[in-house]
Image (cartoon, rainbow, N blue to C red; front, side, top):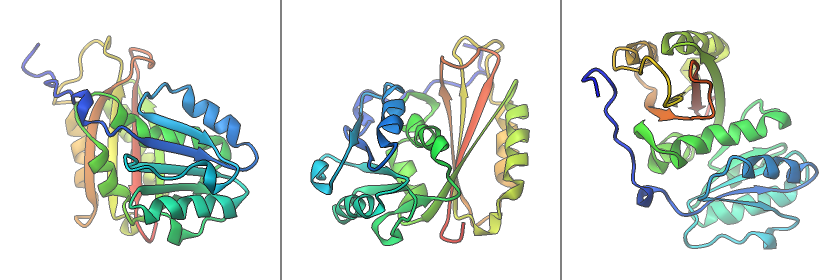
Length: 240
């Protein structure tokens, strides 16, 4: 490998927590859960629940993502059970009781729920070159109250970063407390991504307020066209 290429620091399978859950309730939940299942993440359990009794927290649970566009009373009770069990509890719920969640998505449309869930899960369940794990996600979202995900793409890292900066123009960065940034590329991509390409991401992160806790990763996704870079960010903060 060229010395300028990113050196692989792939995480071993044993570092991945064994239990992340995505729990849907109410109308349309089955369709969302089916889409999440199609991502093929082996360490993610997907459940459609009619009542809190359908999904009791287990000792091995690390994170629960609760999805509901109605039936919010059931969604909030499920979330409270997981939150009280010290499980990182994330809400994509209309009418969420914020006290039951570590963080709730802001301005999320129902049709975007699967991609938001993918943005949360993909960097922690797939192997990366610059690694990011569940503890990093927990740092971003634990007791953060609100979160938002953004996704852009480009033919190069520079293009993807510029597009992300445009998307973030509508975000009040002073209300942001944490950010994680994730680049994805096909392993067949030529030329290979180098550390020089990362300067565009580094420059973007350096422009954030010093109070923002920023974490980043570089990952492979062979479902992408080999000439495309995808860039996702997870933003969080109590004033977001």
